[in-house]
Image (cartoon, rainbow, N blue to C red; front, top):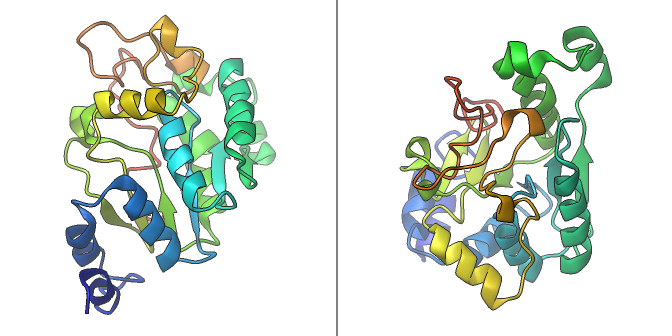
Length: 241
């Protein structure tokens, strides 16, 4: 009996034993992790992508396994036009057939951010209504999800596992061990297009009002919510998503 099968047969209140599965996969290539994730949750797993500076790597890997895998994209209403164009470009280039654009709930926006200025007053509340809550609704049908976080991106991400529990779901981080050099090499060796804002110093791209250029020597995510005591939007913080 192989390690992955053993992991699946030892539940810990989740669909499988995420600790055993993480141990089994932590030295696996990202492509293999994606292949196993999709196989373990047929029809019950989605990937979440921001279509940011490094997103093409994960999306390309997923497309090699299944072009029909659901890809959830959160359109907050504050994104750069370049990001929306990059989403369309990669969707066509990679042949992805289920890129699902998820907007905020219009009634929630009308009640909590009617002037679209919540980002400056309370960025946590803005992220909640424009990202966290929409993603929670979008993930409701799924038992697992795949994302593109990497340990090298920031100190707050330096210990993320390859597989982890996320409330009632399993979360796969197949790119966790890759460095910036690995990602660039992957993109360049396959002639994959970079996000158009990367050449202007944007190494991690979120919403336009809360994203700035990264200075030499800074963490790639240093340009997110610069000057505020905030490092994550909230979709990777807490259970229940």
